Length: 285
Image (cartoon, rainbow, N blue to C red; front, side, top):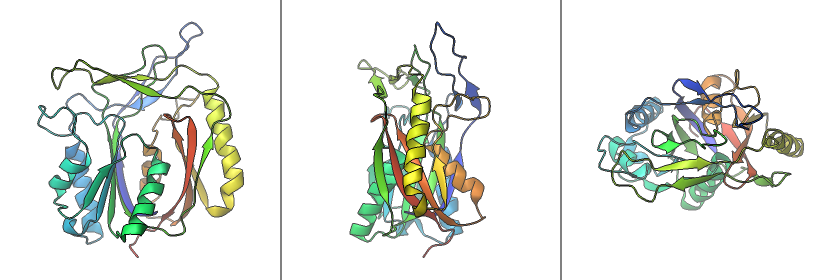
């Protein structure tokens, strides 16, 4: 894909309690929205700002794809307990002609590969990718302490026929992430579910080793690698930003050098690393 522009916001960070030998917990610094935060209040102005910067009318948007692990508190109407992200967003910005679908638990790299394939097949020109995670109603793993970061991001994309993509299994047998859903929800304020990721001390090094091996294989295909930050041993200076890592990198890099980057996404549900090349353009073709 070509990333024409992107915006991203992560709220204040919180540090999970430090691990001890007895507890065997992940020590994670993650972003957390205040209770009551509503996602559409962030997504709408971000998207409108990107479109205005590139003189695109919302009705010219061909495709909207949304991603989320926990799309809680997306809209102000709390009677809507679990809406998909894309459709209320589409209505909010007036993108009446866009095709909309959700890739709720896909890794970012895999999502960019899928979007690119569809965009080429359907000749889509103006594409919005949106990400919103709000874990207010999702509990962290009670034993390991794992939880993903809250955040919001929007990217304006174009298709790239030269995109490269691959998937690499982690070297060790790692138990994947799951989300245990609450099957007894009676109101919008009830807990929706709980993250379930067993503490695995080798996970830190296995992700790093798999990405390093893949980089050695693919480095000729891009100028700069961007590896998603999930679980890190040095939490005091490294945020568990997960899939927001790429959006943060693009936002902090603009309007400096454009170029091709190699994105390495950890897919916690498949215990794999997804890889894709992305070109940061700055201007539409």
